Length: 118
Image 1 (cartoon, rainbow, N blue to C red):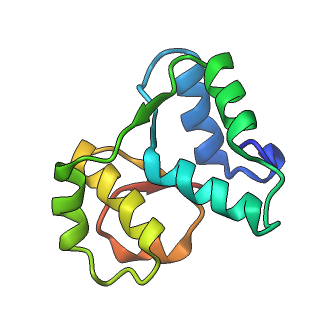
Image 2: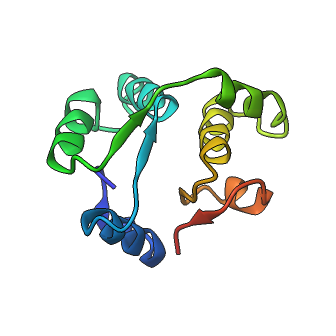
């Protein structure tokens, strides 16, 4: 969303419009923030914590979801995901019973949580 908004799928764009108009409550799991920090350190993205913080300030509907035991209970049952960040992010979505905005085909194909992108 921040690095390449033009690459958002139509359903992802629609979900973000729902955020902007107040029709849904968006959450940013702590795992997303940690992964973003690591990806920037590895040079795989130019977006880091300052840009994320600014975006969350610009759209105050976005809320940070701290990692808690309920998410870790979900995490324990999702060993099919090899990537620990994917596992944590899916855990957060499942715990909230929320739709996950992702273009990750493996997450979408897993059927363990509702996703939107294209």
